[in-house]
Picture 1 (cartoon, rainbow, N blue to C red):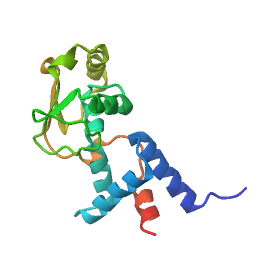
Picture 2 (cartoon, rainbow, N blue to C red):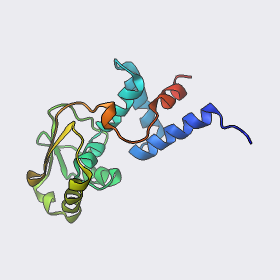
Picture 3 (cartoon, rainbow, N blue to C red):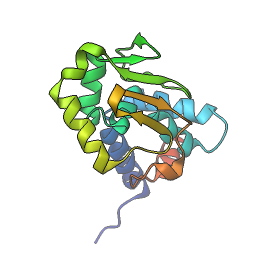
Picture 4 (cartoon, helix red, strand yellow):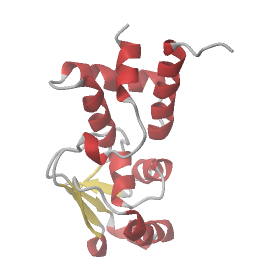
Length: 162
């Protein structure tokens, strides 16, 4: 039986992460370069950047049941960041940013259903949710320990550093 090569394992890990965050190769590579330039561990920086994307943050806050649903909410102008409309899913949120669902959009059944489901799923500690006012706040930067998905970011770093 043939042993799987390191390259194919690394490639599969990268594809898994790209699929989780629904990104194309060019955009993923851009995030890797940003993570590589930042201080600290490149793999952890990459995951923190991916977690800070607006579409992912909306999913984590519980305004959407999936990242693709959150992406569509952003693209359809249902989301405000610090009181301003943002329709770019890759927008990176910062500490103390306030994410709000627009007043007109609060009646959408899918958003209400998602907020009910978040009680079971929970909200990461780096986020703060006010479900009654359809608001969320970024309390701090995400930590590697808070990202519970089975991702081996070191394999991605090894793949790109060749």
